[in-house]
Amino acid sequence: MEEIKLVSNKTQENNFEDKLNEFLKENGLNLEVKPRVETVETLKNSENKEFIEDYVIANDHKLATEASKIFLAYKNGDKQLLVAKENTKEDIDKLIELNNWGNKTVEEHLKEKKFNNPNVILPIETIEKNRKVYRFYEAMDMNLEKYLETHKKLPLKDEISLMMRACVGVEDLNKAGVINVDLAPLNIMLSNNNLKLIDLDGASIINDKDNIVFRNQEGNNRFTAAPELFKKNPCFDKTVDVYAAAVNLYRLIYGNWPYNIEEQTMGISFEEKTNAYKKLHEENNINFPESVPYEIQMVIRKGMSPKPENRYQSIKDFMINLLEAYNKSEKNQ
Image 1: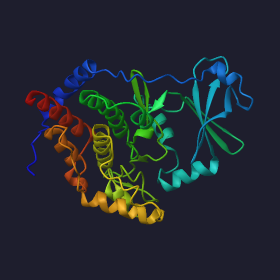
Image 2 (image 1 turned 90 degrees about the vertical axis):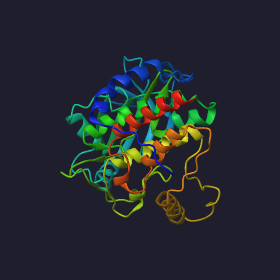
Image 3 (image 1 turned 135 degrees about the vertical axis):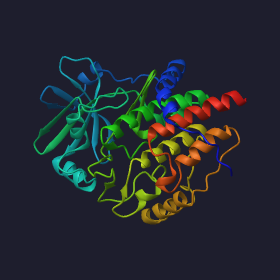
Image 4 (image 1 turned 30 degrees about the vertical axis):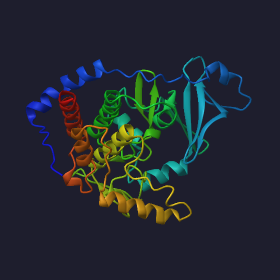
C-alpha cells in the first residue's frame, strides 16, 4: 500500500503551534460527562475515615485496590474533591527498581524540573507516614475507558481534538525527560471541557545520553504496548509513546483495539496470552474499516510501525502529520 507523504519540515513545524491552537479552539471538548455524585460534604459523612495530617481519606469510597489503594479524599477546610493513592514504602522502592528510575520517582523528577502542564495531573502533596506513602491528586469525573463504554461514538473532529490534547501532555512529559509508556483510556481522565493524564507509576525517566531507557521488567498494557516493550528487560525510546498514541487513536475512531483476542485466549495462561499479543504487535497486520479517511489510516499505520526507527520520531511529529491528514481529508470530502 502506497504511503501518503505528510512532510514535517521546519516551516511546517514552526506553523504547527498556531494551527494546533486554532484547531483546539474551534473544537473544544464538550463530552457531556456527568460530574461525580460524591462531594466533600458526602465524604464528611463517611463512617470510615483516615486522617493523614491535614487530609481526610474516606476508606469507604474506594476507587481501586490493585497496585495502589485509591480512595476519595479531601483536605480540611477545602471544598475540592481529591483522590488519595496509598502505597507501602516497599511498593514505591520496587517501582523505582523495576522502572530503573535511579533514586527518585517520576513525580519527584518532574517536581525537580518544575514541570507544569494543565493536561497532566501530579500530586498536590505527598506524605510518608508509618512506612506508607500517601499521594493526593485532584479528582476528575470519569476515565476515557468508561466514557467509551457508555457513550455513543464521537464525531471524527472531536476524536482528533481529544487525542491532540492527550498528546500535548505526552509531548511535555517527553521534553521533561519522561516517557509516558502507558498512554491508555484508563489513564486519561475527563470532565466536560477538560482532559488530563494520570498515573505515571509505569513511566520511565530518560537518564541515558542517547535517550534510551532500560527497564527491569517486561510487558505493559497488551493492547497498547509497542513490540519492544514485550521483551525481557527492554530498552526503548520515546517512540513507544508514538506507538501508544496511534493505538489509542485507532481505538477512539474504530471503537476497538487494533489487536483484541480476549475471547480467543480465554483459559490460557497469562504468559501465553502475552506472547500471543506480542506476535500480533510484531506482525503489524492492522485492519482498517473504510469509514475513516485514508490519510488518517496512514498516520496510524506509520505510528504503529513495529520498528521504532520507522515510526514518527516524536509525539510532535505524530501530531503535525495527524492534523495535516485531518485537514486533507476534510478538503477531499
